[in-house]
Image 1: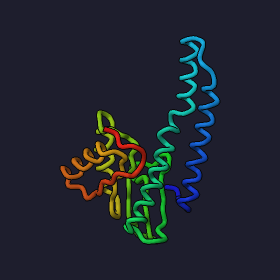
Image 2: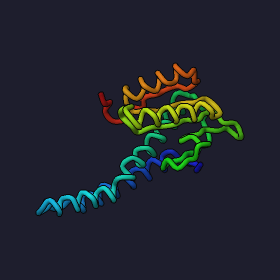
Image 3: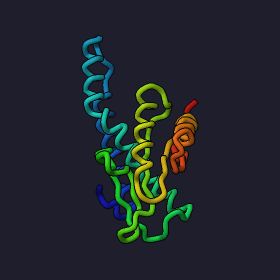
Length: 175
């Protein structure tokens, strides 16, 4: 896990990464394609440029919102040391976000950018919640939609996990 340092600095990095991605996309979408082959080539190029970053930048930002939420709700004290896996690179033994005071883990959290708990997302949610339940400190699962919150809460209750499910104030809720 990496130390976050200043949440404001980390958020500035998210803005810079987002701005660079948007600039790159604009540069690759300046003209109308002349043929189906040209259009598909442009789409493939956009996918190569943006696919990973679209999810990863959102993930980074939601982790920062989660840390801010935990601090604002006074779940953690001022001066909490934050560590994260900003690009979903953590292993099975690491959460997306962890807050500590000295050697004591205060909170462990997982964050998802998914909007709807269908198919693979539902299976991944089950695995993630089981993993999260084994971490130290108070445990939180942060989501961005009511649908994800409802499904996560059902899984938490059915398995008697001690995990708080929280909807982050980010974007529009999806049906």
